[in-house]
Image 1 (cartoon, rainbow, N blue to C red):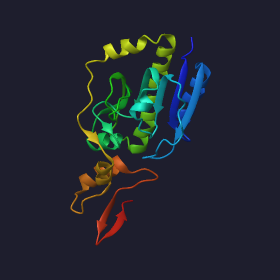
Image 2 (cartoon, helix red, strand yellow):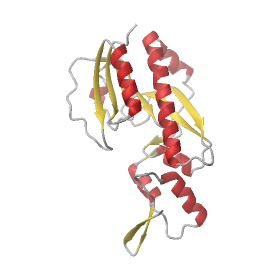
Image 3 (cartoon, rainbow, N blue to C red):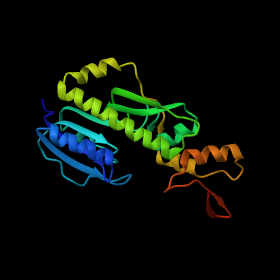
Image 4 (cartoon, rainbow, N blue to C red):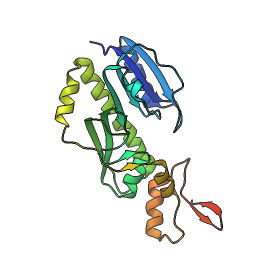
Length: 225
């Protein structure tokens, strides 16, 4: 049994998005793919007037509007790189900074608010003390992919499994806190009075090959390590 008509939003140059794309192309009666490249990206492509059975979002930067969400006959589903305690942007950064012992991903229905719709499934992994941001990001993307395949195969088997997931996880609730871009930018800016423990904590939560925390001294920006 195939999934019907599917619109899939994935991340450009993401091997996990590619895996899901290939699967969905094979297992859908009609398939359309739109990739996303950067935060704040606007959806410029026109979506057909016809309705899709499903819209799936995986690592996509697009924020769908009500008119887009309403194009689904069955459901619009997002795979969020974070547990329900962490909504918005930079969730993994704050989870590491807060010394969380577990982190993961959340599959949920998409509504007009960010990371707010009914929860379908939560998958978690352990954050070890030696795990840095790069390691945790890799773990998150792998568990998101595993979760996505789990959900897709359930829906492919029977679309009624959607309601079963909603009922099973109805007690799971999103946090009221929504992390925003300004919160993440503030995390990267180290206070000049920060002690060594705070510096190590921020570095672990923010440093990647592309990004590093920094200090501002005499109006000049100094990146750490």
